[in-house]
Image (cartoon, rainbow, N blue to C red):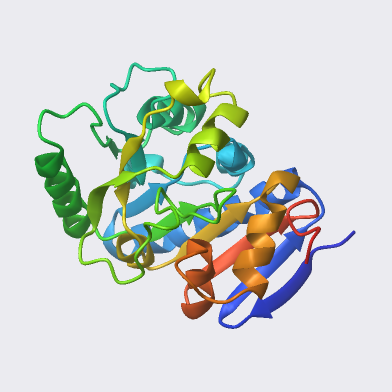
Length: 254
């Protein structure tokens, strides 16, 4: 199988034969975007997603291209409420262990899910994002079509906030168990801090990395169903600065 290129509404879609090929292609595009920003103004800002579906991208980032990561500021898009960055399922910990330790970026700005005031933490992180406008956002689709932790039925395309506390849908919480981050559903926190959909879309470039057969139903809904908050990932079909990367498994229902 060779790479298939198509367009759904405004969204370019690349279907790669394997997860590894998908990750390398997305990594090359990511590095090119970050290099352009560094060449333009001496630094770059990137928002990274977490989760097992991003591991092929992370592998690609460590292998593809020659980038001065000391000039890159890294943000991320969500964290569970009530856990510290020492918790095994913490997203900042995931990023430090799986990618940041290899890349050594200039700065990493984690969300503090254990902050004494969640409202103040959301305001702090929103201010940081506005001070460091994102050149790139690398995101994925959840099994229920979410982007970041903007789950149906709580997602808002026109959210007035950039960062907020959200209740997690059961489907998202079950996904965390399925990926091995928590032993049982009862162990998964019920709330999280997340970047909202407008905050994600504000990035100059969006790369959506969605491998694996367990994401095939979400991909089909996002690309062939209505553009609706019931499938938050469908919003990418309306913007001109996103690309969706699939593998043969995640594209299998198209």
